[in-house]
Every structure is written in structure tokens, then in C-alpha cells.
Amino acid sequence: MTPLLFFASKESFGSLLILPVIQEFLIAGATGAAALTLSLWAVKSLPVGVKTVFGRLFSVVIVFVLGFFFFGEIPLWNELFFVTLILIAGGALAMQKNEFAHLDNKVAKGIFLTFVSAILAGFSFYYMSKLSREVDPFLSAYVWETLIGLFALLFGILRSISAQKIARVSWKEFGTIALVSWPTIIGTGCFAYAITLGPLGIANAIGAGGILVSIVIAHFLYGEKLIRAQWFWIAVIFVGLVGLKLMGS
Image (cartoon, rainbow, N blue to C red; front, side):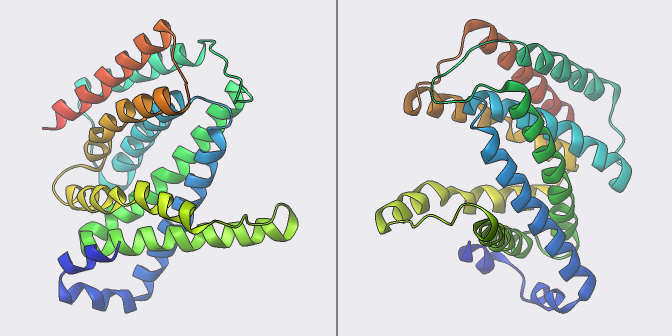
């Protein structure tokens, strides 16, 4: 994430000494790490593509609510229509049965974990968005992601004390992790900058393209082939998310 600092303004670094800013960064990092932890637990129960859809569904709705209460961003009637469409399609998707041998197939558990994860992620995105607007988008993105990593490490250490110990990672595995995670530099930086240009809810909804990417990857890497009904309702949700983007453009 260090390259993001080259794009941050020099004046913004002084804000890291302000107590309220530090507190908001800590909240954003802690809730972000907790959200990711629950999200990864959810993929033990749901196919990656379906989990991603529900995560995006819950996230968009929650962020719209947070944007309304904290930023005064009042959604238009056509935006509410697409949100309603997304919720209906999400309910229909949840009722589809498609079990896989490598999952525990506890759909309700997976959806619940995804929902709680989305709530935490919503608060994390809110504080990160607030800091991006008030401090600097690129500095905020760097500090946010760094704190998420540190809090995730803390969670792992705490869990190792009472339960399973932290697994050792070989250099090859570390290289693989680094390879698949480097696009986060671009994604987080772009999202943080986008927040300074438009409403929080719309910026979050634009990320719907990630749904198709995750479905394709899960299809080929994990053999998680979705049935037609799942594809249909995912398509409806995707249309709803794209509709929200167009309404905000």
C-alpha cells in the first residue's frame, strides 16, 4: 500500500497527530478487519459468487442508510426502486438450493455472517469515506488498509491464545498471497478518491463489477457451478446495482 503515499498531499500527514482523526482511523480499521474475518468465515457455508452477491447487496443497502443519516444524502425514488429490486432478488437467491461437497452448505449461517460483516463494513466504509473527504483520500486509504492488517493480526493472536494457533506460511504461500492482493492498492486508492467526487452510496454500488469476477474465479478454481435460477437472480441483482450506478451518474 506504500505507493499510495506518493499521491497524498504533504499537508495531510499532519492530521495523523489529531486525536479525533486517530480515533476514527482506529474504528475504521477495527471494523474493517472484523468485517473481513466474518466474510471469510461465510465462504465456508456459501459459494464464493453467492457470498459476494449477498455481501454487495447488504453493503449497498447499509451504506445508503448510513449515507442518509450521516451525510444527509437522500436517495431518489428511482434509487429506492432499484434497492427494493435488489432486496427481492436477494431473498429469492437465498432460497435456491445448490450444495457443494467442500462446503458445510449452511446457507442461513453464511447469510447471517455476511450480513453482520456487511454492517461492520458499512461503518468501516463510512469512517474511511469521511476521512477521505476531510484528510486525504490516498493517505486515508493507506492508513485504513494498514490498520485492517494490524487488527487482523491482533485478532489472530487473540484467537491463538484461546483456540487454534496461527498457521505458519511458507515463502511460496506468502508470494501467492502478495500476488493476488496487490490489486488492492489500485482498488482502495480509486475507491477512496471516488468518495471525494460523489455520494457514498453510489460509489459503493459501482463496485458491482466485482461480482462477476468472483463468480468466474470460483467457477474455474473451486468448481462452484451455479444453477440457472441462481444465475437469473444474480443477474437481477446486478441489474439493480448497475441501475443505482446510472442513477448516480
